[in-house]
Length: 178
Image (tube, rainbow, N blue to C red; front, side, top):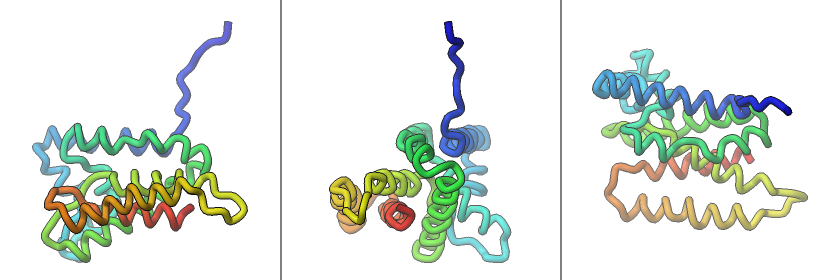
């Protein structure tokens, strides 16, 4: 009989998810102060070194467990298998930086945290994974119209705490990377 073992099959996605869980737990222990200081991007002086770190680490921060679980990377493992760990890590880092920079420049009075931009990047990236011979996959068109189109409508019409622009930036990054 063959022995069953657990395989760490998507190291980037699993490590990212575990780091985000660690950031959430740290935030709970510190009553949110670590989340604000390390895992949220907001307008702060460019002379402060943490300003630059937060351009990348904001994707690890989450307001609560529900926010975290909604951003967990269920779509990530197949993307890591298709594109490779290094390439997917580069996509995550670049998307984090792009969404953090957009937040910092255009929304100085608010803070951003969470991995939803990364999730949208992966959704669009996954819809491009079937692209062959220059043909545009119907899944890409549907994702852009339904997901990103919905975010554009929500950005104009809703007054909630969700950063639709982060979703759009993530989706644009996924399209560019694909």
